[in-house]
Length: 320
Length: 228
Image 1 (tube, rainbow over the protein chains, first blue to last red):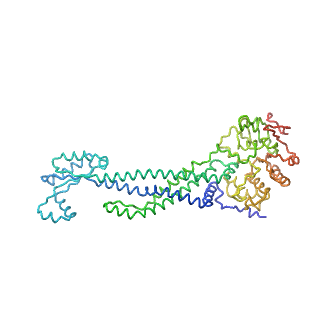
Image 2: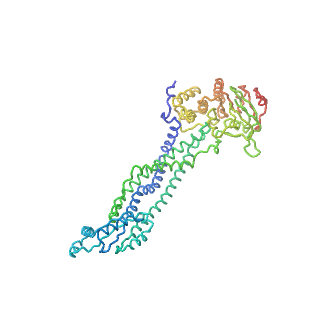
Image 3: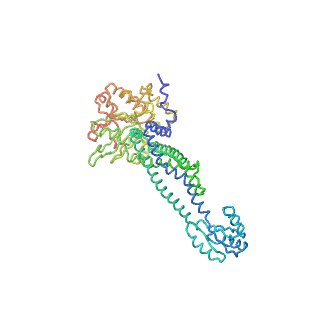
């Protein structure tokens, strides 16, 4: 008598708990329909890859626009008659004005030294004998002043000072850059949103198909007294599983894509003397991606949840 | 064990699967539920199993009044009874063992309990050596035994059978019937729907006779509903 054999369960021990059963059923679905599952994961991965890349690049883009604007300044060239002492005092006074983050006084000597360092025609200046350069105050406005475009009014205020001979600033290229960056962010964000919605629909649809395949199991489970928790657990698990694996595939695609554009991007940014740099995604970014994709999977699964009150099964009835 | 009071089930406006059905079954009893196809046997069993809700009337099983039952509690109720179906409702994607273990997984039993109980249930229906087979390779009678093992594995107090011998040869039917009698002997209340005249003639258990959704024939040798 083979009691020994009968005591042997067909599956491993962990598959006989409620959660283990749900998980093993979900895994079995993936395994049994390998090709279809693989295709689904690829679709999810490719769909999510662009949003993921945008997420990875977003910190770099943010740096680009913030850093470039923070370095932006106005330069007030002072009258020749203003002494270093007066110039420094004026700089201090300005520093306390609203809308100004900081000021720095550049004396005539300093200006000459800087000019010599940075310019090929430093020798020409030597030939002049005297220092032709005026003293100057570099004004760093608050970043919100720069953003809101109220720099003009700040400039007007500063120009009123008698000590100022000429005020120079040029924010056009910063504005252009900002416009481009925010456009990229906006368009990218919209695309990311659409693609994420697509992923959501794909997951929802895949799970509904899966449920059709598992219909008989669910009906029998319902006849045997399975409640909605039991019915929904595998659905949620498979959703989370698709989300997780889709997120992994998307991350891989994104990292590969990133490496492909890293060199050209660095070249481009060095042409603009920018500090812009694409960095490798951090573990926390990857964590975010996986968390979001799992949430997407769960959300997609929610749309196909079993609702007990609507689905009193008619299986097992043979005629009235 | 089971009390029906003026239970009606309307499946379309004006069309009744069951009409004003009242009866009482005692705990530990064995009762045949008979009638032609379409007389309402399945509907009655589905009402007991709470797979269907009555249009009117009250049903009480054990000490549970179905009218006070919330939908969320219905599945748990079903876990406390065993149901055997004519078409046995086995899952062909898993072994005999896993089929019988399914209600226990749903009930959240421990693995060690599952092992013991499934083995015991399979032994009782004489299929201990087929545990790892796929149900598909077994005969109709054996498949029905798996269904019975699955129905009793959680040791229910109430066993419902919906034409369990409907597709089987007479001698196999008698064997299946013997199994139900054994469970009844160990204290399980059995409600056995069948229109198999052979079985009805051979075994003289009390009958609930349905005709076009209404109870007919002699009342059971149990107290009538009004006296309860």
